[in-house]
Length: 91
Image 1: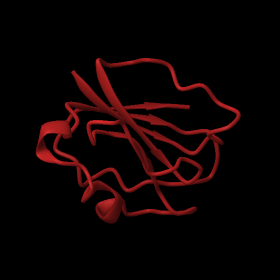
Image 2: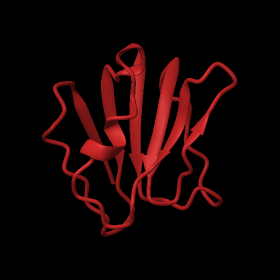
Image 3: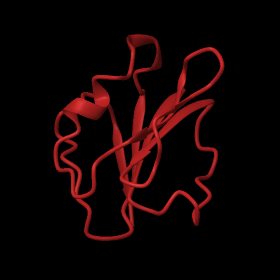
Image 4: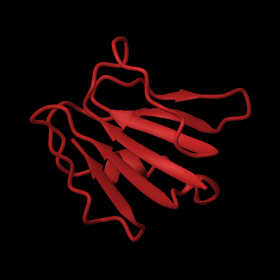
């Protein structure tokens, strides 16, 4: 299973749990980072972003998530209606 984890938590203070075999973390404090094979590990989303189209345009089909996990810790809002996959919101 592939998961996209949306988090507004600071990358240097939060450890994101391993939820899926393959996962990408995206949020305002997460860097654009890829592994040695070019697969995305994390994606930066501008602070206060409410539309993730630009961020998601970086994800190739072979990494497109089967599930989205939204870890909401503050007032940052994501527009998640653009996804055609199951979504779980956690506060």
